[in-house]
Image 1: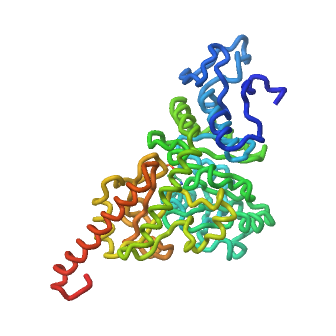
Image 2: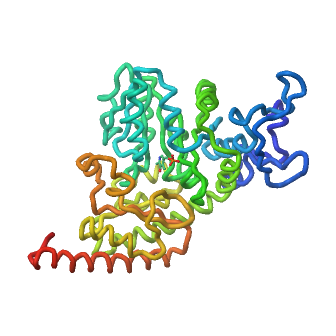
Image 3: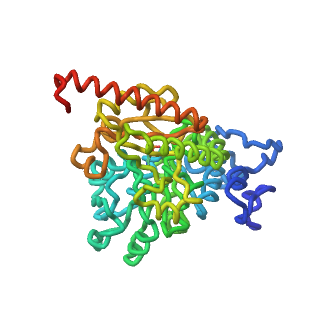
Length: 416
Ligand SMILES: *Cc1c(COP(=O)(O)O)cnc(C)c1O
């Protein structure tokens, strides 16, 4: 640190500090000229040079690097226990740049139930660059069967979207590393407060900053964090060369959001736990997917990988009464808004089979548990009791109403 005086704010947190302290202070120097406690938004696209090739500070042109993006990147690196972080225009741009860093002819092994946009990139874009992706639903079990001499990358999403299945990162990483394969974890659903994949053997952790890190549903952005100097060289070259970068304003907003991540993630977990328990106790629900529940099939992984075994703010459940009941449920809640996305302060609800995951063929969807009656819930930071009451009243209305409708539809003969 001593040889980078410009980078070192007077109040720089040290690695011994805990999450909340790092969230508030990492990458947050006081403005050296005015003393402003909060960094100014630096909108300038270019930076003066005192002689040819001698910029005043560390910046030259803002696609290559700018103060707000660098400060945000430092903060994410600190929270993910990484040496480096690089921010991009979206979570999807982050995925694209990592895939584009691979040589043509490379092979990727991915878990089956990845984010819909990641699935779309893997199946419809990567191919054009000569990169092939194999999907597997049980990556810990059969990763060795899928590895070829061309395999360069393993892609994990844990928890998965929208069924909240967990992957044992350490188990996959130790097998992948025997073959020199890089392991990436999409940590969007938990945020760095609940899970730090690099501590479990992953090489790169990626986030859609759009979700928990920004947390206020007003910025689209992505980030990747890692420790390797070689990766830093390669990925920052592509960050500049491709130019899929976030604006200074978005970087500033996302950094502001990140400062309260620990408070929001804790509250969202409290709320999701209350809602999951209420759903599990309801006669109108077939099953609940929430890694914070004792009934979750991968609860042991949550206890090992998540901070204090926390389940995060996301859950999904199957409602009785089929797709019609699922739709009606989402239109009957008053606090949960029917909308895509997740990880914001406000609670959201959606039906993956016809919204976020509509692009995946039905058989493939159902093979990984995304049935037509599955409802995905993102718990915000409202009061738990209010969210619980809203879910319970909507269940009554949706399931009872769909029973009546089904009766009419089948002349009282039973199932529609
Ligand atoms: C939203 C999301 C992405 C894509 O991020 P964008 O910022 O929307 O491009 C990737 N992975 C997961 C798990 C997501 O939820």
